[in-house]
Image (cartoon, rainbow, N blue to C red; front, side, top):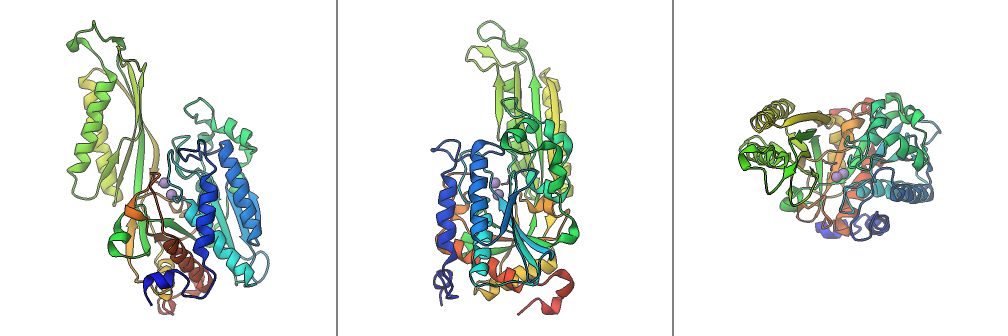
Length: 431
Ligand code: HGY
Ligand code: MN
Ligand code: MN
């Protein structure tokens, strides 16, 4: 049987992929603007999406609620009420002008898997919980993984004072959304309540497509450092201030950006660096820019390498600012270590992939995921699903229905065969 035949329902079960893709499209219609998908943390669209997801969770047989940070949480009881759970999930916020699969694919696949168990009246010796994390992308308040950090109990209260580009604080936005910022602690879960956390996600890179595989087994999630930089010079008249007398903050930022690109390009150990946002003030054709803010996102497969690179880049930015007589403010807004997937759990993902008839292929994740926060409360594993051209964070992001189905079937197989760590051993990791 070919992979495509398998992916389109070789197990004889109703195709999960079609339900998932239909819902992906429904969710994608909930956006700040119809032309460019954006579902930003604590916006009214975010709230509408939460309500829709909660309704799908209930339809799938779960008890569902919105937790203290805005995560959508569903619980499907096991053979007895109150058992520890296998937690599945992904995020339902998006970047700006996003693709519709990044986050929702994992979340909706998990809901469809539970719905399938429920239709068959299948109860397991553990509960299954599904979480739609409220903020993974960190678009609004500069720090990422706010939803999963709240669940892991590592949410830092001072984050509530962060302000978005319109000056609205997270605290204010939470109240508007209908949440109580004083009770975020209530979202935290204890390690004893979770057997593990497993996330299905689109690969967001080209490797699976190149290997002609619908799914992959993730080995680790690469660490990342994000910084916010502000250069302050002197605004002035574009026609009168001689070039040698300028303190042009935008020209300084441009030099920094070029330096970051060159620095990362010449690195041979997989370092990547991105300046994804820049704002120049006052922003007029005939005014020398007096103040510029920009962000930096630096990632590498190894933590020591990333840390050394960040220190080196910071020194170079400082030198550029000094030479140009610009005042520099540089803050680390986010730092995450590399998170390895737990070997015992990864072995069960590999078993599920093999049991569904796919080749087992392991690959690391260069993109960040909620597992980076969940590692503080549970062992973590991930399943990747192929996406067209490896394109992500782009409206052209696309997953074939057959691949969505393949991913969901692997996830379902994993759930049905899941053995908690205590019950799993290397010899029992293959069927
Ligand atoms: O930026 C990331 O890696 C993720 O997509 N939030
Ligand atoms: Mn993303
Ligand atoms: Mn994502």
